[in-house]
Image 1 (tube, protein in one colour):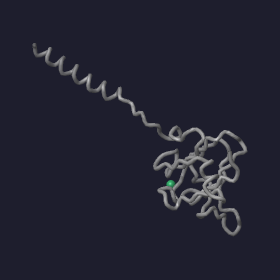
Image 2: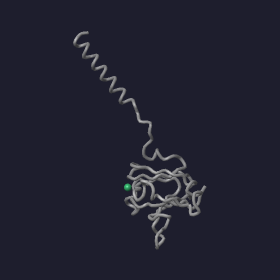
Image 3: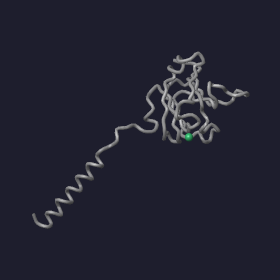
Image 4: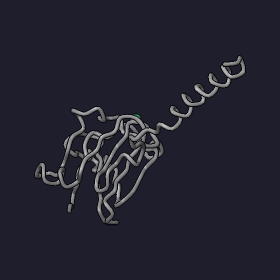
Length: 141
Ligand SMILES: [Ca+2]
């Protein structure tokens, strides 16, 4: 092989390596797409990034008489900064509480409602960023 032929072979090999690397997409879903149909999801960072918690409203509704689930034993306790809910019905509500056991505080105002199919990219403007400790599904499915 000539000198130029060797260089051409090296460049060709390099292009193959680059092409292979670029052509390998990640199969993992990210952001809002990582929240399944029918589920409600929270992320510890804004824009649906960071640690994700996923739950199904019917599970919470049926799990306890109060239809409440605490985050205190999860990595999401007091850290959720973005939300997504894929439940379709406009009147469906999922209620997030600042305290555990779905306690809304002495003024009954320490909660945040997410209605129907809805997404919140950043809770920073709501006064509820990094505060959620429990979630309730008052009416369900
Ligand atoms: Ca956060």
